[in-house]
Length: 245
Image (cartoon, rainbow, N blue to C red; front, side, top):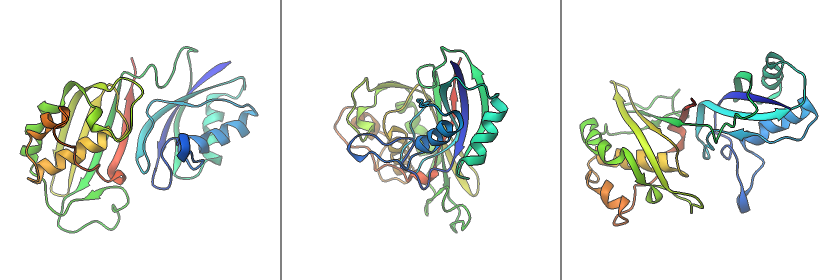
């Protein structure tokens, strides 16, 4: 069996996330759309493993997935076939054959999310579906004061919206905040993320930047003495990259 690695770009607006399991299981997911085409292409039933399960409405510039097949199609043919039959809001930007030991999730070393937020006075008509518009500009300096409290290894259970069956200790390597006259971007690099962890962190940082809450609330959230802010709007959230050794 060959092991095929895919790099995937998608607009998550109309999907129920990468996959939807349990009592709310849905077939309208990114993974199901890709699996349907893979199975038609190869005539095989297979599994598709991803580097990071994105939530409802979240987009991706660089999702990574892998599947195994006995098909003898070369990787260029695989990429072209998938892009021909996938919906136009999902694209395979790269396909390659990798070692049998490669696993998109288990081998991932870090994951990068970026949040796009417009801060100019007039909301953009053309960016409205792919960025969040904040009618008040958050104070970047206040947000940056909260960054050291979030970085490093912590138990992020209180920065998640789902019950966890595995360890809730994660490590954030870096949070970078960029702004210009029209847009603010928050980039978070971590070894892994819990369900909606990145959205709760961004929502809390925005509230700190708007003066709604102090940076000291970060420690209180970790301690269970305060709640994280509401998750940020998913339309501005992108899985930018998954890094491997």
